[in-house]
Length: 100
Image (cartoon, rainbow, N blue to C red; front, side):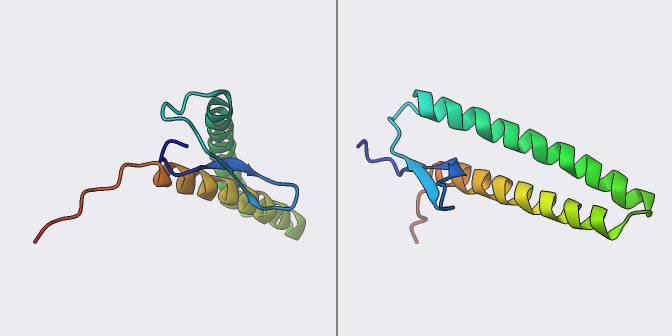
């Protein structure tokens, strides 16, 4: 291992547990590229769902079933986006501690 923290991947195990990758220092291996592409797709789907949600809510005529489905979809997308943010945040360089 290279001393880098493992990367949180944008998918989970069948049991719902997080998956990690002990990536090389370049971060350009096959699994890293696959994860980058999946994150991009997840973020794009989330953006599309936000537009759809705004359309449903702006119309002010929805059924309980539509709102329930929307809440489920938004929760799923928010979970994915949160995982992407955690993963990317963990890979940011840590600021040097200020000396007093």
